[in-house]
Image 1: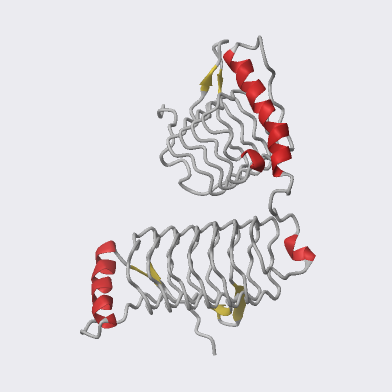
Image 2: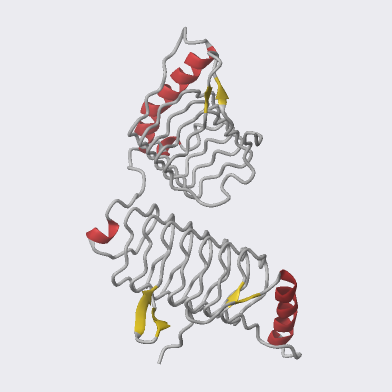
Length: 351
């Protein structure tokens, strides 16, 4: 009979307690005393476990929402039905780990290693009271950032990769029954043998005529920048609505592109670092993994855009003061975003 991990009450664990358990686990691994780390049904939300050595540790049923596990050694660890939503697992070693039924929605697993991991969508029975039972289906990697991840020989049956960033991921030998990649970014992915319906709306590699695309698009950026620098006497505004801007991913950085129109554009991973993009229009654009660090985005519109995992480090998202005396707010209405994306952005002072 399956253990009801969902029905158990989770106990909170402090950062200091985690550090003490980690020290004991280290001794356990070297066979010099200590004890195996046990975090079964424990709450570790938001704690820092980056670079920790926790191979073979037991996190079954634990809550690690927003926890920092980057670069941690978690080889052969158990995360059975654990809650890892929005957790930072970049460069983590998760080889041979048990991740059946774990939830990774909004988590970042870029460059993590999951060779031979078990990532099946486990079915857990949750007791809701006398005579009330529900089945919980987990196995969610939707909207995760998993660039360069290795799923070699992993069991991924029933897993949800919808909207995930899977650039250069390795699926060689993986079991992919009933897997969904709807809207996922699969550039550079090989050995992905799934039915066409599983890839509905997926973003694949830029077309082979990349040089031709650059030759056609770059003059538009040059003309727009000239229009800005000459006060509108030369050049013209760039209309990039509905275009695939990925061929220009390194040609935007540092440019003066105030008022740029790129509605519904595909700009996944594009580098807008240091750009002048005041009042730019990115409504409905796919901006996943784009870099807006240090960009001036005052008054820009991102209504309905997908900005999951986009970087806004020290970007300016304050209101734009117009010559008329009015102001235009930077608009993220109904955009798809992650928590804390604007933690280091420049914002308007609280009233």
